[in-house]
Image (cartoon, rainbow, N blue to C red; front, side):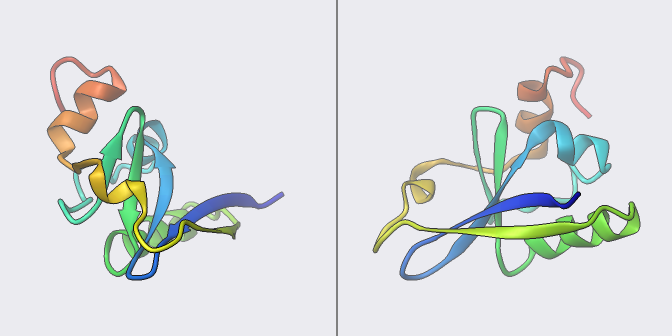
Length: 99
């Protein structure tokens, strides 16, 4: 069974929605850049850099995947989320002492 990765895009850019817990399980919580976004318990990985970090981690762990595309028009609401920060991500994930 394949893992489904939700891709969100607007007229200028795209992101993949990934749970913070999965980033931690894959040991890449601190490898995501501030070009990505964070909202609640999810990261929205920027398509040009951070998505490839995530995909590489999936491959290293022999996890098959497929994509589900979601177009959000001219300006995705994701652009209004907070910039990704690994320390904040760790706290939101429930790790009170950070990474």
